[in-house]
Image (tube, rainbow, N blue to C red):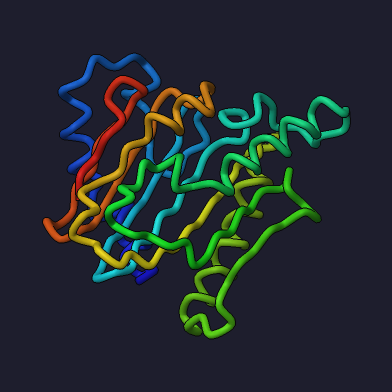
Length: 210
């Protein structure tokens, strides 16, 4: 399914641009672009196909931690640990309906600030094209880090198996906004039974349907 997530940023660019026209937006809204490192703005891609739900969240580290430098002090290390603990409970962050019976099959967190402390729960039988994508992403990430200087990002990928996917009508990110108040906006893009759509989410308008 990961090819669906790869296609989302390109397929939904016009959709998100159109949706954002209906919001009051500032200078940063007008110039934000998918995949750019903009403080306060995160990107979420989700795809529901059959019983499988995949979600990817990309965010500048400052949105989640309050800083982007290496965690050296005890306080910074505590903030990193707290953010990891939140990200490792994605069911709460994404407001997944209990009726959908979604079980987390895979969770992967990637960030220079998490170096040496990765938690990966992956099936060994991942498809070869998925591994190729991961290598491509690593190269892209290294390039972004080089260009961005001290900027650091957090990339979270989750895969669920949902026993009753019809009960999963969408995502509700209110808890995510509450957990990470440095996140002001999320550019959400989804593929589901009703096709593709994109929406710019905020704390007071944090739902998107499949």
